[in-house]
Image (cartoon, rainbow, N blue to C red; front, side, top):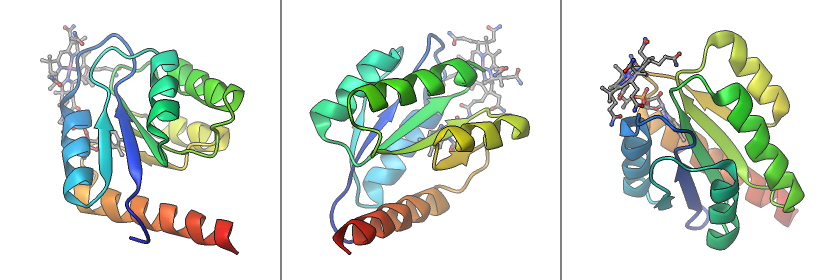
Length: 138
Ligand code: B12
């Protein structure tokens, strides 16, 4: 890792499926990232405020409720409004195959569904952030 990256892991929406978010937060911490977990029931506004206040390099959203088609575009819109659309956005949880391409077209860098390996998520994030960092230095 080129430097220690800071990642906000957030659980948008009204449901209580927080296991995936907690597992990811811990796995990324163990992989050497600085992780801030927002806890349950976060609105898009609260999540984007966390990104701004923590000066995050990446944002991970965990969504198992089926509300991703509404919540992810709203988070992206608020990131743009606050000039933080540079943050690398990844989404995980119950995301039907048909929705994966739609989320990527909106600007989501990576989508991870049940069974995704924690080691692979960590190395994918490290590579993506290192690549972006090096491109900015060029
Ligand atoms: C455990 C579980 C619960 C637990 C949640 C406990 C908790 N604290 O999280 C309980 C029993 C409370 C529960 C309740 C309900 N549940 Co439930 N639940 C599940 C279940 C069986 C497993 C989810 C889980 O914890 N998996 C283990 C974790 C580690 O895996 P994961 O979250 O998928 O995370 C992995 C990836 O997805 C990815 N990932 C996830 N998040 C993120 C984030 C980032 C940043 C990244 C990079 C990766 C990533 O990486 C992880 C590692 O591989 C799923 C079905 C399933 N097979 O997924 C249903 C499921 C999510 N539940 C469902 C439903 C409907 C409900 C209820 C509404 C049922 C009801 N009528 O009461 C309630 C809602 C209650 C509430 N208040 O929200 C549905 C959702 C349907 C939908 N999306 O259309 C599912 C899909 C079951 C189904 N097939 O119908 N549930």
